[in-house]
Length: 322
Image 1 (spheres, rainbow, N blue to C red):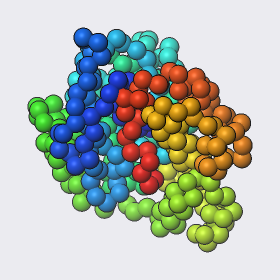
Image 2 (image 1 turned 90 degrees about the vertical axis):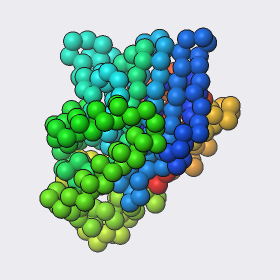
Image 3 (image 1 turned 180 degrees about the vertical axis):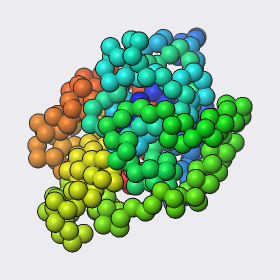
């Protein structure tokens, strides 16, 4: 997945403007007398290829470093400002080896990315279903596995740069989302050249989503009538992760969403209850996943992201079906 890894489509913020039908009826907030932040959430196009779509714009913010978290989705970002700067560690993200690109494509990954948040930024971030990679990106998600950031023009072709320029020229979020949706629809219509996802893999992912990542590999393999070894091989060849890794990502996504909802409600997250509700064996297993996927304990991550969470920066569709 990409630099913000779909956990925060618009990165740090103090308030959010949301827009379920791409109409601009939200609001822009200011932090003190200098910083302003705007978030616009659009209904994703039909078909389930895109899970969420969020537009973001910030100005006058103090530069910072943000953790982009793993999730069950691929990331596609069109920056409307300067390039997105990221790395696998804080040192890389802030050093000469940082990855900088105006169009970000990111695969499924198992550890956080680190994203430099400049004084001002703007863009559109999409959370793409991994089984939609062939249709929208022209390749299976497995070819992006473990890659935090890939230059989008390398995946989408030079036309993507023209699409970004058109998005930059438009002033209205509704127009931007409509233009981007039309571009993605044209790519999906030409998707035959990328081949089809095997039905067993599609059904396996749907089963994992229905069980919110809490099912067993034995139950999954029985459901799709394949051996565990054969299913794991097919699943990994398509997505780049094993069914077990996908299940952990899905389960963590739901657990993180529960933590976010508690913080938004100004309630201390009950991690033991969240762990039980999300299918973790116990509280310690939830903490283990938080440390792997965020690089911090749940309490440390909440403290770090509290203002961002309260602003809506993490509300980008993670409660939707995966």
